[in-house]
Length: 81
Image (cartoon, rainbow, N blue to C red):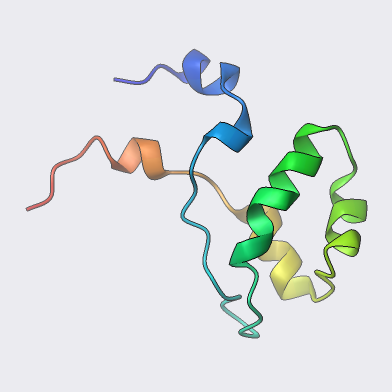
């Protein structure tokens, strides 16, 4: 079982995500930008500036990045039926 402290200690770029390939609302491909986004955020840059640099302009795409929560490690603990 993974402890919450271990999750806090890990670098976010080491964690693999299941980010949608396309924005749910507009359909713009955004999945390829996730790793670049995390690298720059971990370097201490402002999320607004990072999204502007990556050409994530629409509010629906920005909400996808800002609201995404990594649940992969939590979900992987459960068995499939």
